[in-house]
Image (cartoon, rainbow, N blue to C red; front, top):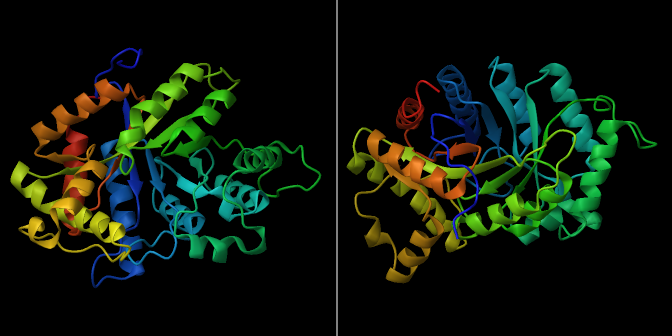
Amino acid sequence: MPINRPTKSINEISFSVLDLASIVQGGTPRQSFQHSIDLAQLTEKLGFKRYWLAEHHNMPGIASSATSVVIGHVAAHTSTIRVGSGGIMLPNHSPLVIAEQFGTLEAMFPGRIDLGLGRAPGTDQRTAHALRGANYTNGDDFPEQLELLQGYFQGSEAVKAIPGEGANIPIWLLGSSGFSARLSAQLGMPFAFASHFSPENTIPALELYYDNFQPSEEYKEPYAMVAVNVIAADTDEEAEFLATSIKQSFLNMMRNTPSQLQPPVNNLDELMTPYEKAVLEKQLSSTIIGSPITVKTKLQSFLDETKADEIMVSTMVYDHNARLHSHKLVGGTWVGH
């Protein structure tokens, strides 16, 4: 059954950016952060709404583990685009610390900070234990942690978050399954879904969110953003070539051998078994790759299916200039927005 919401045009919705601060083969975190600044400044000019960074740990190809610090760096080098987390993995942290960190960011960059929260570790179990120590949980207490975090922002806790108390920071719940979809619906919060790595769960999770949404003071209607991999180039063939880098990353993750972002290759089939290819295609089934016309058509189809209010673009491309160009082409699909 199709989702029962009005169909929108890609010219009617907002577009945003998800940045994993990729470290390319032979590159350094310093280079990754400069590339993030370049991309944030470009997408700000193009009219993208938000620029979010993701928390991951123990991954050779991702530099945004200290997510709050990188958010501050990006916000300091931009002026209008909203900057936030996609997301902070709350079970890895004390809610008080996150309230203080984001209260500090909001004080520095008022009206521009978003706090997206997830409950997964953003890493492997061994690293999760290293992060959480004696306070290790599997995320089951996420609703209680969220309530405590909101209490710090509202000033209703005995311990005060300074900065943080009274800060007006939009909180989003992020998910790749139904848990956060249902929770954000119950609490009347905006919801962001990770279709860029969990495409099979996209429609079921969005249906849960739309169907169970309870209006809140901030949101009278559901507001859903969906993250999707988008790689655009001047031709379909060039885009497919560039996309072999992200495919290699997912392939290495499947093999439990995470790596830096690899250069594109001419024949990816030579590097994987038929079984690996089938799994890879399934995991990246929502990924949009192609020329501007192809991307525009596929983005509209994706929007028709998800009925999202906002699309967040994730573009893992090895060559920095090609990555910038991809965002220019994506921005061009909704010029006039």
